[in-house]
Amino acid sequence: MIFVLLSSGVGIRAYRDLSRPGAFDYWRETYVSASMRSSVIPDAGIDGSGHGRRMLAISGRIGAASASWFRERLDEAHLSAGDAVLLSSQGGALNQAAIMGEVIRAHGLVTAVGTADASGRIRPAYCASACVLVFAGGKTRYGIEGSELGVHRFTTNTPAGDPVAEAQRVSGAVLGYMTRMGVSSTIVEAMSQTSEIRWLSPKEALAMNLVTTPVTRP
Image (cartoon, rainbow, N blue to C red):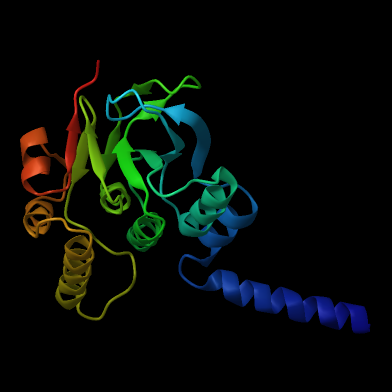
């Protein structure tokens, strides 16, 4: 009887926890299946200098628990300041992306958009929506020729009494984040113009200081 009561209590608490908005997604990604994938490239060349660097390549949708997942992958990868995070993602959870970007900046890592094979050869890819916030975390942000960065107006699934005020809050948070990362405020203007993905030209990304170092592929 005591066992049944204790089990019921645990079950009720778990149900309450999973009933919170987004809680089930967080639980599923933490304990069942992460939405992102990663691989470590020991010696990859990004800038064409001939000097390779250690790289963590991540891909997939940024989910409800991706920031915790990313911290664990960084610890396992043993990256040092100046090493790279290579991104390929359609976006996802805005708050998780911002945390990932902050972690990248705190570690002094650089970012680029692309995919890489085991030999370290980098191919173009795309980074859209919330992924752009992760990319912005790089101390240096490489623009690989052929890779694309896409932005759009951010929305939230959190119930809000005043949708207009909530939209302004999200825009303000994104603006503050991008400013801290050294990106021009004009990127928020570009985001606000459309609910569809707008692919930035290399010239636009450079003018916004979203890309700091363009790279021409050999």
